[in-house]
Amino acid sequence: MKLISTLFEDDYFLAVDKPSGVLSIPPRNGEEEDIYSYFKAKYQDLRLVHRIDKDTSGILLFAKGEEAQRAMSMLFESHEIFKEYMAILFGTPKLDEDTIENFLDEHPNVKGTYRVAFQGKGKRAVSHYRVEEKYKRHSLVSFQIETGRTHQIRVHAQFLGCPLAFDPLYNLQNGIFISRFIKNYKGKEDERSIIQRLSLHARTMRFYHPFTEEVIDIQSPFPKDFQKALEILRKYV
Image (cartoon, rainbow, N blue to C red; front, side, top):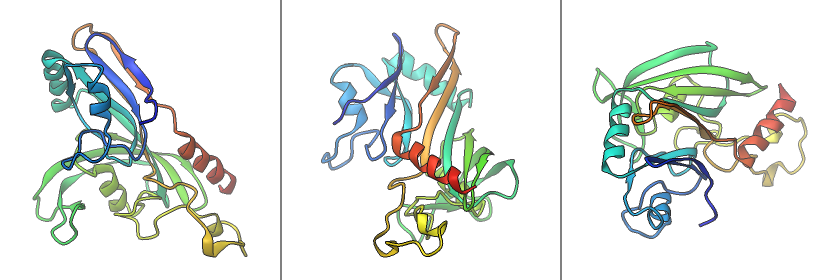
């Protein structure tokens, strides 16, 4: 596994910058590398606090020891942690900012995917979003999530009618392609998306430290592929 950057560390917690394409926790079959096992070799009592999808990049937080794990889990459960994700969406939401509150459950017909539940079933999911930048066919949108349901932002973006620009599960037009901006674009047959993974990045995590009472503000810069996609999209506002 390539070198993983540390974003924050003290006696209680460790926050690292997870690349897209790497698992947060060990897989059942044990055949893929994961961030937890990588750092567990260095920190014997490292504990899981939360996880992010394999193809999402950004902040991943661990606790050092049982006491720290318990304290941080309480902050997550009481929604006292500010978590901001940045997403490149296909299209632009009608409202520049709003709150989505509904219930999510597993899709009965499509294994491994989730949907907005019918008749109040499923688990409550709350996301606040704000449109940060608008482009010709896409937008950069920040999501602050109160709950951490599986695929929550991906499903909520689809619910807005603007799925993640690159999302093989929830976007049928998966990818960002230059040919959609330029007439008579050559090489259309062999064209690849300008971003090749989930266009979602966990950028910010902020909370009051449960032991030192300091404000901890952790930031993850955009990865090169995410930043490059934004630079290209900004040319076609």
